[in-house]
Each structure stands twice: as C-alpha cells, then as structure tokens.
Amino acid sequence: MKKMITRRNFLKAAGVSAAALGLAACGGSSSSTASSAASSTAASSTAAKADGKVYYLNFKPEQDQDWQDLAAEYTKETGVPVTVVTAASGQYETTLMSEMEKSEAPTLFQVNGPTGLKNWKDYCADLSDTKLRGELIDDSLALQSDGKDLGIDWVQESYGIIYNKQLLEKAGYKAEDINSFDKLKACADDIQARKDELGFAAFTSAGMDGSSDWRFKTHLANLPIYYEYKADGISSTDAIKGTYLDNYKQIWDLYITDSTCDPTLLASKTGNDAVAEFVGKKAVFYQNGTWAYNDVKDLGDDNLGMLPIYIGVDGEENQGLCTGSENFWCVNNNSSDADIQATLDFLYWCVTSEAGTSAMADKMGFVIPFKKAKDSTNPLITIANQYVADGKTSVDWCFSTMPSEEWKNGLGSALTAYAAGTGDWDGVVTAFVDGWAKEYKLANG
Image 1 (cartoon, rainbow, N blue to C red):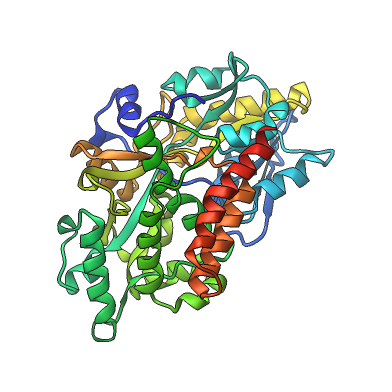
Image 2: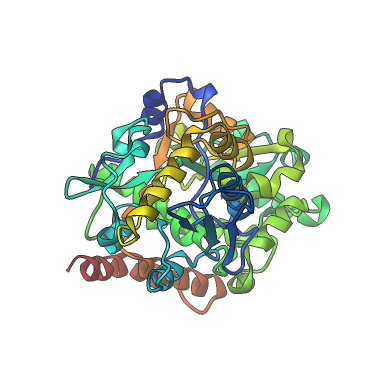
C-alpha cells in the first residue's frame, strides 16, 4: 500500500501555510440528509446538444444539493447533461453495486482507498495522463494499481470532537485544559453528574442506526488501529492484534454513559438525533468532522470548537485531529468514450473553474488538493489548521485499510450489543481481531 500522506506533508505540498489552507470533510456519511437515494438531472433548454453525458453517484449525502446545483450550472454553461444520484447514508457500496448493473451505469463513482479499489479496479479507467491528474498537488494523492492511477483523491478531511464553547464554559471548563483522555473523562463525568442542574449532558447520543454508526465502527475505530500501526511501524496488516482495544473501550464507555440517552436506546438513535441534540444545546460534545459544519453552524461560528479524540495513549497531549481521505474519484471504463470524456471534462471544470472551486470551498466547505483550489470559509477547517500550526501530530486515516464493509458491520453489531447489555466486550474484541483476519483472508484469497 502506498504511504499515506500526512496532514503536515499535504500542507507542505500545497506550498502554503497551515493558517491559509484547510482540509475538509468526511466521506459519504452524514446524519443530516438523504435518508434514501435522491437524484436530479441538470438540464438546460437553451444548451447545445452534447456528445457525452455524466452520471455521478455521489458518496456524500450532506452535499447532495450542492452537487445538484453545481451540475445544473455546468449544464447551463456547456450543454452537457449531468445527473447526480446521492446514495443514502451508509448505503454507498450497496447502491453502487446495484447501479453498476444497469445499462445506464454511473460514469463517475468513488472508492474509499486501497480496500475499496480492490473491488472496483476492473471498472476504473486509467487517469494517469488526464488533465485532472495533472492538477493534483501531490503524486501520493493518486490511488494506484498495477502502475496506473485509477483513483484521484479529491478532498482531504478532518474529524474530532466538536464542542459548544458556551456550554463548556457554563460547566466551568476551558478546552485548552483538556489534552488527554483522563482530563476529558473528568470533565464529561462532572457535566453528566450535574446534567439536571446544567440543563445538558456531556455527549450527544452515540447512535448505532445506519445513519450514525459509521462514526464509531469506522471513525472511532480508526484510533486503536492508528496507534497499533504506529507502534509496529506498519501501514496495513492482515491480522490486527488489538493492542489498543482497552483504550477503545474506555472512550466508547465514556460516549455511551455520559450521554443524552440510556445506552440501551442506541440501536435506534440516528445521526439526525445527534445533530438535533447538539444544535438544541442538549450536549456539549459531538463526534464528527469539518464536513458537519452546515449541520451545526446555527450555533454560531464563534461558539464552535474541536478537540482531538483522546483514548488514553502515552503522548496524546501532542495529538491533533484525525486527518486523511476516503474520497477517490473513479471513472467507469465501461462507459462510452464520449461519456468518459464528458466526465473527465466535468471533473476538470470542478477543480479549476471559478464556479467549481468556489462551490467546493464556500458551499461545500472543502479544501481540495488541486492547484487552483480556493481557501475554504469553513471555520472548523481553521481550527483543524491551527492544530497543525501548533505542532500537533495529526492522526492518519487508517480505516481505509479495514478489510471489508462486513468487518465494520460486525464491529458495529458488537458495539451495539455491548451498549445494550446483551453482549460483552469480549464480543467486541472478537469482532475486531478475529473478524479482521477472517475478512482479510476472504478479500485477499
């Protein structure tokens, strides 16, 4: 597997200071939109007839309308029809498999990294010599197989624990004093003990509904994987040892006990529930990423902060946010030549034109790793940048090495059973360790 680019190296490659550049949003999972697949076709009655067309299967429900608007603008400008279909949260792979079976399959889709590419590389056109590939600021941002660039990283993202500054201060705490798991736990336990007096809990509900469980079976699970890889000096493995699963347990226990709801209710709690609790000032802390800004912006930019996810590892006071990508554009090589070219032209326009780069930076809140990218106006990105400027070490996104979606689902089920009291932590360990070895073997023969 190619070496993962770090946030610091990304900023260096971009040739700008950390304060001037931000990294944005998580791939494909948001609690705020798209409970089912939605689609629209950008069309213009005045546009000239185009030779090719574009069908984009979008991974990010939270940016559905932004992509619809951008597609419409491109069609108005060029006459090329662009259809955007947005998969429901947590259903991208299933939707992609279904759509690829159709005669009018997506011309543009995405994979989450090396693991996802294994499933779809036979459908991926070689992007090595395209103009889009030439706009990347760093060669390591191209996803390769057999010496070919089959995927293009189109957005870098950061996540951590978003917090409400006013509520935290009302409880008598300052974010700068929280730089370890022990300090986070002391703060959260105290807030939870006084929740009736304060009028709010520590954490939003850790919902394990499909619109929310990715935050814990993927994003939270990244932390013990990252630290194991770091300790062992590796970037992937066929057999995870689970060295830091006790740390995973203590942060999960904190999430589900110092919360707005009883742990037994988490199976049915959704991403929308967590957003409503946070925006409704029912909780101080909410695990999510910079992509969630549009969901929480009603609290006010000056009231939003982000903490790293601390799990009790030595030296974590120097830890920053979790930063990386699971968003790689791929072009369907089974599409017609005209549709492939139309798709490449659309993508090039998205990352080079005034309209495209402005939409990415301002409406979607992204910073894209292309030469003509604009600075994002997303204030959560400014916070993420500050950690880098302060010399904190970003946590790599290692979850792109998770062996399969089935592994994530097994882990999610075990976490849910543990929270509900119908399962124990040994079940989580088994799903994590034994499940990894099993799924890796199935995926790799």
